[in-house]
Image (cartoon, rainbow over all chains, first blue to last red; front, top):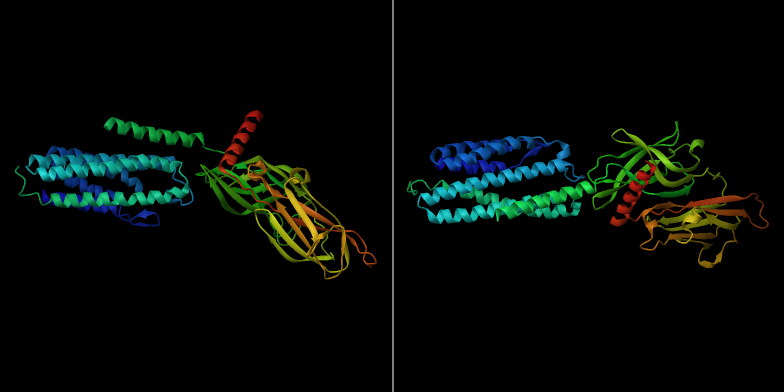
Length: 185
Length: 276
């Protein structure tokens, strides 16, 4: 179980890394989501709620394949994003919101049932924080379709707290690796 | 709570997409250009057009006749106005050596234009008049100093190479801009000495021209390039003979705003509907 939580944190960390050479994603997100899928599959054998989260991870892995090579049009600095890219970005955000909500909710229940109420309480707070942040991003994204170019700087600023939330999730998964031995069941 | 969040998200997405569709501009809309000038070798002519911000279509060629095509030498973004983008395309009318073909002389209200993605169409462009070039050899004046700005302020100082009489001055596009274009031709340092007057060899004349469109003047949305024609006659007692003309253009780039661009697009759409 500890290994699965570690794998989950490494998977999310790899999703956060975005290294591109000539538009090509040399470290595609599908690898990170794949690791998270297998980790959640193994945890699903212990608690079925993780299995549901694994389903969302699989969906994220498939959808993220489109990001490997979006082509120059996906990075055209002089043009605003097309409605297609906005819709795609929205779908990614929504899927990730549902995936992380499901994962955090499964962990929260797991901690509560395992007589770790303090952890369950922290997890609930972090789940709300993360999904709230992700929802705000989902709410702001369609404005990119019509907002003036000057507002792109604000969008860049908004990415920073979101990155911090992702890091919070990474450390939450790593912390869960230490539950073993403390859980009552 | 969840239902409210989902509802708010749906409203924001639908609202933004609706706004995007309502302001989508599939065509290119050209601003009105009022130019009346004599093209000279190597000197570009600017055309301004509006696209939707996410359009990749660009102007590449202007066709005047079967034989005469002008290619766009450079395009730049002039400004963004809400969902629309104004582009400036520079056309080279005459290469470094050559002259304007006779088919291109005259007044044009429409150009046939070709776009980067293949299609072509005939579009209204305002009114552009190309006049034949004067013989510049042996002109009794030469430029010693010149400055101009795209906002329409111009200052030129010319020196007389021989004694000459500056008889009269006129400028094109008079009926369109007479109330908003001021010009002054006077002896340098003596503003009270205006045409007609005589210049001795080595003396200088100052030509000032400036546009003064009011802030809400719809002509701010348009590009102007009138040409001044200064009639030169031999000075009294001069050995030279014959009447010559000194020509000088004054350029005024458009100063659009969001409402003006929107109005232009609505007007063009309305005109297209009437034409159908």
